[in-house]
Amino acid sequence: MAVQIYNTLSRSKQPLVPLEPGHVRMYVCGMTVYDYCHLGHARVMAVFDVVQRWLKARGLRVTYVRNITDVDDKIIRRALQAGVGVRELTDGFIEAMHQDADALGIERPDLEPRATEHIGAMQAMIGRLIERGLAYQDAAGDVDFAVRRFAGYGRLSGKSLDELHAGERVEVDEAKRDPLDFVLWKHAKADEPAEVRWESPWGPGRPGWHIECSAMSCELLGEQFDIHGGGADLQFPHHENEIAQTEGVTGKPWVSLWMHNGFVRVDEEKMSKSLGNFFTIRDVLKRVDAETLRFFIIRAHYRSPLNYSEDALRDARSALERLYVALQPHADVAPAIDWEHPLARRFGAAMDDDFNTPEAMAVLFELAGEINRGAGPAAAALLKGLAGTLGLLRDTPMHFLQGSTADDAKARIEQRVQERARAKQARDYQLADRIRAELLEQGIQLEDKPGGVTLWRRA
Image (cartoon, rainbow, N blue to C red; front, side, top):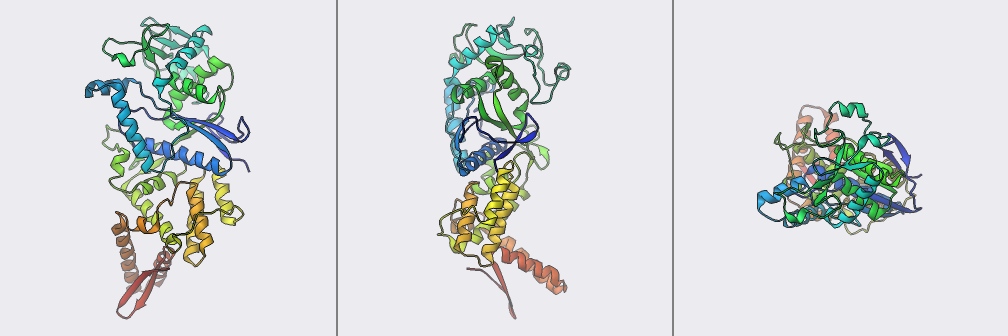
């Protein structure tokens, strides 16, 4: 079965049919590097890392581009506040981003273009939009896109021009001919550093945010490609504007499939600095190991909201421990996937169905249960192989289980043993048996003796 992907544009699942047979070209909007990466960035990186890993596992060649926005209003303000150059600031945060991504087991994209390296392509695209009557230089010196001149604006987000005109997320700017229009080229300001000022036919200045991704993606992947992805917050206006300006230049359908991952919430509230619930990846990695954070992110379906909480992290760690406990007796087995195995087929069907990681992970736990009940090295090799397509079980069982949170795992097991003892004392033998079976699934064998209970890990 072909990989089926939910297309935000059509609002339905569609088969992935690469424009070039056997070769998937994918562009994902990356980070604006003026600060450390946060949980929302972690989700984007992890989600599309799984996407490209799975497509490769299915035998497809993937060219994966994830850009870096290194010129932007926020970047300029942060550099001026810090008293450093823009390049110095962005270089530092790019290095920090790579460190965070490496910790999470994120494979580097094939191409990681910086916006400042593609100014010529942006200017060429803007020039063509002006020639086609889709852009103009306004009274303030900026070049703007004329939204009403592009038929079909709003089809990605489902927003009509009337709704937009009523004021939804539209900035009032008297220099524009229409408040709906968005900027393509910003004229240089007197207080901005010279390093973010480029000469152009419309005077010195710098590109607007939206034109950056259109120019970089077309330059690196061509005027038509297979997948464009990013967070749900980018659907409007960023991706809507990208479609308008790109198809305004080419006159051709631009992207075959649009993918958007869901929002990250914190204790069921929107994550934001104003609410005091804003977490960088580095903040979270002080609380939990990196593989647990990755597991927490990808076990939720990529289109669903992801709710971050301390309880959710603890649960993720506990679940991941169950997989490592199952692998412990077969730590030296090399990963191998027999796609004819019934569980491997179920795993593949789940991932082919719009990257259904919750169902795929359920298969991993079924395999772990079989191993704990005596299945041999082949089952362990299959568990390692399937988990590897998700970027999981990269560690050795001994190292992971003896990690910084091993004491927490020991405490959780002891708590369940005590709960079983209380259940037996209350003659609730059904509950006691359930707890015993649960621990056995984790490879923990209980042995009742006159002096108490002995527990040991099954070999």
